Structure formats: C-alpha cells, structure tokens
Length: 415
Image (cartoon, rainbow, N blue to C red; front, side, top):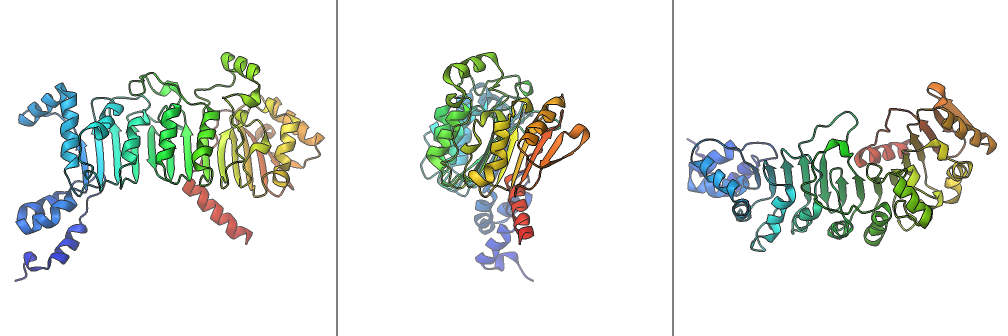
C-alpha cells in the first residue's frame, strides 16, 4: 500500500507548496502535516510560516492572563511579538490586526528592537489593520519596513466607514507605487519615503476630509507638506521614472481660506507654496489628476503628458487666456495629449455659460450636452477637451491599471 512518507522529499515539498497559505486564510492542512511526523514537519513547517496573521483577541484562561500582562506592559508586548516573528526564517508575509496602541508605536518596534540583521530577510509584505482608531496614519514608521531587503509592499488599513464616493482609509507603499489616502506627512518624512522607493512610477496622494476622523493620535503634532514642496521632492528623486500623478490637497489647503489668500497676495500666486511649480522636469509623466486652482500656467505641464484631469474648478476663474492655453496645449507644449477634462461642481450655470462665451470669442468649435449645457466638448483639436460642470457629482478617478488598459485600447483603435 502506498505511503505518503515513501515519496521523495522533492515531491513532498511540492505537495506542501501547493498548500501555501495566503492572506486571510487558515492553514489547518499544513498544521496537520507538521504534527504527522518529523519528516513532514521539516517539509511543511517553513511553508506554514511564510504567512503570519496576528490578531489579539481576549478569552478567559491562561492565554488571557498572558495577553493581559502584555497589554499592561506595551513595551514588553511589542518586543515579544517582534522577537517571535523575526525568528521565523521563512516568514514572507505579515498581516497584523492591532486592537490597541496606535500604528506609529507598533511599527517603531520593528526597527528599534535589537533584531539580528538576518531576521525578516525574506519578508515580502507587511499589512497593518488598525481597529478602533479612525485617525490618519503617520508613515514614518513604515519606511524602515519598506527598506528591509526583500520587502515588496507595505500597507495600512483603518476602521473607518466608507461612504459613496469616499476613498478607502488605506495606504499602500511599494518601490514603484505609492497610494496614500489615509495619512498626514511632513516634508522630512516625504523625502525619506521617496528615497526608499527605488523606481517610483505611480503616486496617488489625497488628504482625507477632516469630517471622516475624530482623532489624530498617530500623527500628533505635524506639519503637512505643501503642494510646491511635494512636486519639488518628486522632481529631485523620480523625475525620470514617474508616469502617473494624482494629488489632491483641497481638504487641507483651501485656496479660498482667508489666510492662504492673504499669503498668496503677498508672495505672488506663481511663487506660493500652495500651488504647483513647473512639471516640465518630468521626462515620462503621462497621466495627471490635480486641482485646477493649483496649476497656474498650462505651459508648466510635462511634455510627455497624455491624459489630464483638472478637478475642483471654479469656472468663473477659467478666464479666456487660460482657456486659450488649454485649446492650444497640443500644438505648443504637450504634443502627445489625448484627453483633458476640467471638472467643477458649480451650482450656478452662469459660470459654464461664461466659459462658452470665452470659447466663442476665441473661435473654438464646441458642442454641449447634459442639462443646461453643463458639459462642453470642444471639437477639431486633435484631442478631447471637455468642461464638466456637474453640481453634487464627482469625477470618477481610475486606477493606474484601468488607465493603462484604456491606453492600450486607444492604441488599437488608432491603428
């Protein structure tokens, strides 16, 4: 009769690898193999520990007493968890569900504990799900994790309700992509983060609306970097690699706040820290979603640009000169441009009608659609230019994968 133990070690290893754990799953089969024999334990145990999900839940009994001790001594608890995890030689994935302590304190343990440099050598992903805390995340503690030798992705998640149109309360960091929807970051942390990303291609940074959170425990006292600092930091580190940029500061730096208006009047709008400097230094920046009010000059857009979304437009501020530059941008500054959408939520229709008057004086051909002509599409430009004045509606933003798919479809259509 055939016996599993009679199989060559190579086949046993292949069987065990087919049962490799994944995020959010239990591993009873691998655990059972470990208990069957010494041989199978030697084969299955390293694979069992490639993914570890730590979740603290309290139940009566000895485990509860042990965990209560750890909870009463947070420093001890963090050292114990880090020490245990660091001694799993095959560990590749960690998913930590944290019920207590704020994320920054938990993350600091990974790089302040006296851990052997060889520990965490195979770690590829780290995910922290923070329960019972809705405040934005301080990313400083995640940067050393991203710099571990094999780490590919670091991500965070907070327990915050997400309504229709809300972005998820998450952050995701890798060497090629940053997706930051639930954090506040000062300039030194931003600079360290960009240096830790070896070849950044995609950056999404949106400051969360303050009504979505109640505490700032993890961030504490901070100084959020300004739009000008953001672009300069990107230019200094990833001017040759960056292909997609989505940035939205309006929930924190409101261009219509009195203090900001007064400061911009003193410094001059073009020199203000609250608007963007020139993007011309980016060699491969092809897709952008930014706020209309922070782009002072159309000629500051990158030459390689193919798709542009300008959000939060007050159409009364879209003057004839700015519209003229948008109409001529393909011929003058962005020869590869394929689509430009200017989106606003003005309640009044007068502002979009004023933009139509500007277009008529410029001799531009356009058509209107939607109620009251709130959508204006310009014709004969060699690219799509559309003004959308849709009160109460936000422009749907696509992931980089969706946009790349559309780019490929468009290329096929052109052919």
